[in-house]
Length: 241
View 1 (spheres, helix red, strand yellow):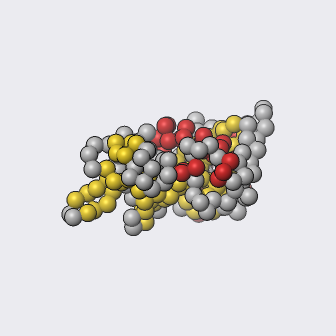
View 2 (cartoon, rainbow, N blue to C red; view 1 turned 120 degrees about the vertical axis):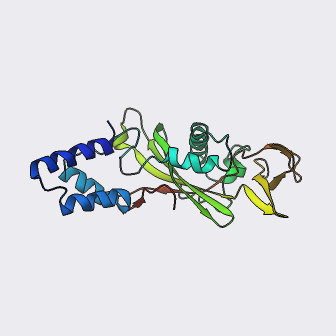
View 3 (tube, rainbow, N blue to C red; view 1 turned 90 degrees about the horizontal axis):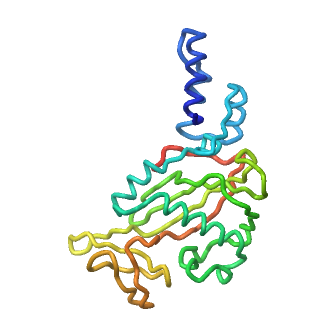
């Protein structure tokens, strides 16, 4: 049973006892779940209502798994987008970045997917495995797209998700479509050199800068930031902002 199911059961029980519907405090807790609040507040409220907020599918239960909602948004750009494939790729990229001290130490096939401004010095992360990874927020800003991925990291053997270290991975890319001469034109980034690639025919094109053959949306995303999640981190759960 997931956190939100447990939470609903708790509220229903309280409502049955009181006979007067949800209290002001309960409504405020619901508001924080759906809008924003810090993890510290969530932990305090969960203890107050005797709710276990740790769940391997939605991790701490408050950082909502929005894979389904965001996948629908990304499928509008590329019908072949697969959240499971993307999450596997994101975890591989996290592993590469966690063990590197500079772009030069990244595997050559991953360098194009990490921003030149990425802070490697602030990203020394011990890694033994993952307990959860899913898309949390997606936003379009003009001709750009932003994607936030939640990931919980096991930093030593034998620990549970309750003891995991939690992070947000933030990705950026130019929009996969542009309007030129009143036509919608598909573009992506070359995974070899990072240059923009315009697709004139089908879903495969050769990069004009380095000659690499690119498949449409071969992850034009670039990782710009990995942020540790602390008790003071404000969480937004609406999926698209």
